Image (cartoon, rainbow, N blue to C red; front, side, top):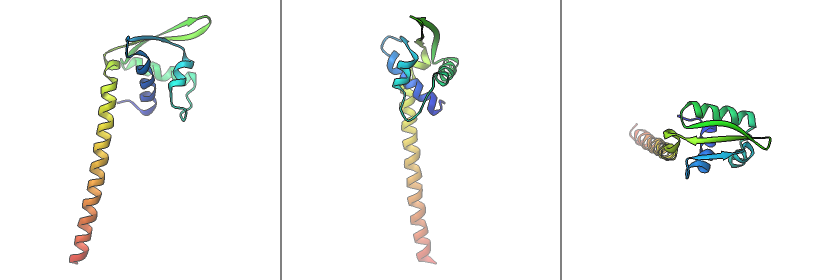
Amino acid sequence: MLNRRESEVMQAVYSLCHEKGTCLVAPSELLELLPARKKFTETELDGVLGELALDNYFELLLSERKGEKMYVISLRANGYAFKRYYTQMKRDAAGKLFWAIASAVVAFLVGCVLKRLF
């Protein structure tokens, strides 16, 4: 399971690479796609990309173009399945929230019934 930072980076990578399966992207382009409320630095981005590459989401190669650092990213099976995984994760969270609210309502109603009886 991915943490929030990994999930945000993977969403950005998936949005760039899902059509062809590979992409050549500069760190600055990738940082622009990440949410503004989370301040990622280039070193943090390198770390998260390395972790995702180790988890077999994509293959990561470092390259240089005109003196600028570039990432060559090729999606693997886990990377292609990310969108489905992300959708399931949101659905599971919504289900847990529903059951928590339903349980609270039932507990409240049982409490009201017990107060009336005693």
